[in-house]
Length: 264
Length: 358
Image 1 (cartoon, rainbow over the protein chains, first blue to last red):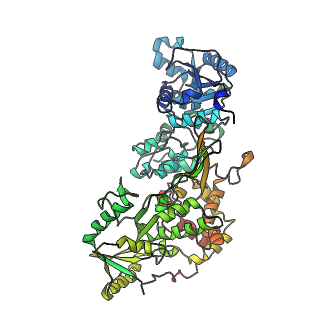
Image 2 (image 1 turned 90 degrees about the vertical axis):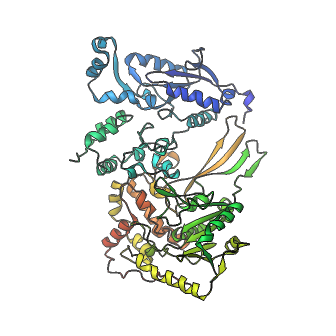
Image 3 (image 1 turned 45 degrees about the vertical axis):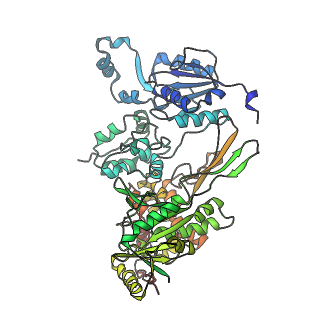
């Protein structure tokens, strides 16, 4: 192993697109608990925390979804510059909450929001940054988990691309012996959603909203059956799967039509 | 058999004394469910509980456990676990049978020293169930509705008093210096026998076949169409294996600090129901289909562990059925397999009866 002092610190930059920048705030929070991160990386651009900026960096963390054609060029520049690109949070990873509008007519949405000035804003369907550029790594969640961010950065420094957790939230929820949200007659997306958040929403009594994205190969037919058995109508099922999973469910339904029978 | 009798009025004192010398855990109510948790006193301890979310195995194979601490330059390598002496109160007998299976599994070949360290540090105080804990349990079929060994102490509720069956010296030592536990006399033993013998009306059989047929039934059912049907229902959420008292599959990872100096080797529970469990190098997944994962789970419980350890890998606690949102229950699965194999003419299993205190 090369002693750390001989290693050049990787230059790290943070960029934001359409997002609330809450994931970057979580990074700042994680730095308070892990100040040693600053001994091993060199942050050269981080609008949320520093006035410095740089055109030269090794690792780029990108928060936010791509919502305009004009975002694409900036994303490509980042991709061309950085050797590692990381999608930071649900917006960059999935399109995020911004993608709710993708199930509606874009023009209608734009006019509803911007009214007479709608034509000034050339937005398009919000998408994950991986739809525009190649992404090496994902830190999922809304917001991200600070602990997971630190774990993935550690992996990067060790030359390992740690995949985010790909098992469902139920695993973590059971480990904590939480009351199953369904037992309280409420709905939870835990069975199809990636774990890694320590089941924080169910622990405090709220059903999972799916912010970390779906697991690989979720059994959606079985899941729709469970939701129906718990009294959800088709409209309610679709609403539930829209907060964070619009793009994922839309791409699934393009592959095979999602058939959800109404309960009534 | 060697019994102690303790008036219930003295039980709180006894628990307080234990808390003075040990970490004491037992079933407690949490948001309408029951979980094994640390006791500060007898308050909150619920000995009359249906079942716990997680079985007490979590004290022997913790959900997450640091196995080793080391320095990356090789100068330091030490076993991390130094378990605290712990009394586990109120274990149901199904869970005692599950721990007997664990004892066998973890001592096979190279003994798992981390398990063994926990095992040596715990004192198991079980309690006789006098009624079925819920509709998903089938402990009588599995022969686990009572226990005559595997515990350090075994409690039987006799109304005003508890009887304690002494299973080991460690168990007997819990009464050292405690003056309110008395040697059982003949009338106590009569009462114990009466309670143990008359409880069986409360324990219906729920399998349509004799548990001794289970390995053969599963063997014959390897190519059953039922597995595909289960695969269509299953969410692959892994809840069934997480709550199972006999599941012990684990994953081991190395976690190194940021400065790449110190590291820990960590063991966590794993689940055969999740996508990545059977993923191997090169990305091949030899149990990609949910049907195969469900089949593997039931085969393992009812046959493979019998083949490997001469014990059935299910104790009939019913936790997996309660946890399953898709409604997959071992009782239904086993009975359906049995029906498809036309083995329903078999007599119900009658040989598992209480081994009443002699």
